[in-house]
Length: 305
Image (cartoon, rainbow, N blue to C red; front, side):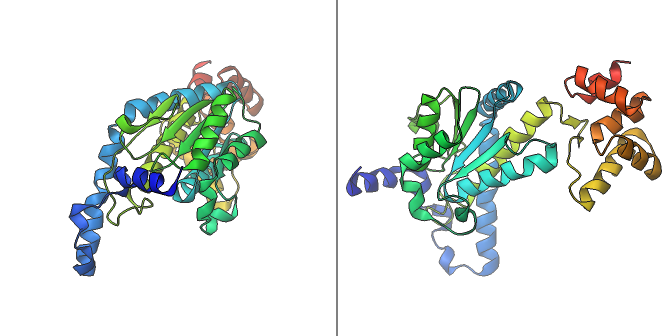
């Protein structure tokens, strides 16, 4: 693509337009600047809400992949890539998942998480290579993240994933009617022009964060990693999480601190096992058997008795 063609393409994108509401923001005092930003930010949840039917389709693809032993890959550049990294990194401690289950690929590699590697996003072949290196297959799901939709690194990754039979999702902040990439599900929260033209780390970044929160959290709930509204598959990797596990057991069972601690120790730190022990009145071995037969769902394991 030539420079003039790229210029014309970018100029047409909604994410590259000027926002009338902030045209004179350079003349505003500090409080007014913040009010303008806040007013625009309030548009984001509504835009994401309009995309829930498509987000639901994405969740179904992800759950199906997980149940077949597949993985979820987020692919992005810049802010989008960092949001993917954040969501993937939080899954193991929050939901007890294997780190391989949800992974993030960012243009420019790990260094790009901390320091901008802007030119890295321009090479579609690098995106395709990253997919090949991770052995993506028909069991996996690849979710592209690009506010503009056009980021070559992300497009290259999505096209390679499709060639390898993977299911594909794409999250962009430009309108659906302008989306022309072949994917299984497109999620297009239209948040409008940014307060500062083209600064898609702002509303677009917020929208992408909300969408990924929904995809990963809903998928984990569907896999039985939440009981009522509490995370019961968390990994006890630090003091805070160990205390949170005790509190979860106490809230759900009425046990005191000492009883919750004993159950957690007998369950080798596995919160689900300790929970079934306390609620069903069984030992750790029987609780593990019940959870296995129930596919990891606590309610089913308790009701089995």
